Length: 139
Image 1 (cartoon, rainbow, N blue to C red):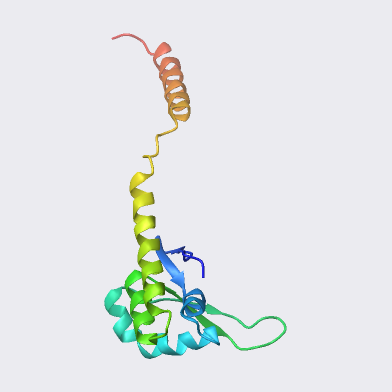
Image 2 (cartoon, helix red, strand yellow):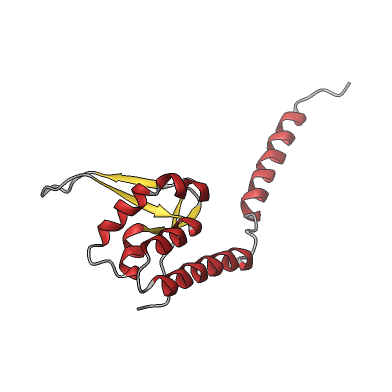
């Protein structure tokens, strides 16, 4: 088992896809985790909005499905409710992924404005003002 989970950005928030969490927990049929998520939706809402994505059936057939993207609290809670052999390791992976995400956001340098664009705009404004004032009569 690899030591990292993949975080997806959903509504500007890092989240874990339900099927990845299920695979990490050792579900034989990963989609079964969705039954647990649906049955505990009210409880999971305590940790924030439960992000669900409705997927239409494939062109080859099948049924529509609902995918879930869980935030940190939701993912840890589902892992503990699933009570699988891998639960402690998966909870550790989730926590570490979120810590790493928070540290990377803090460590990222602040974005500097594009000074060339700003200077170009200011130059155009100055030229326009010069043309306008050139034809004005002094009072």
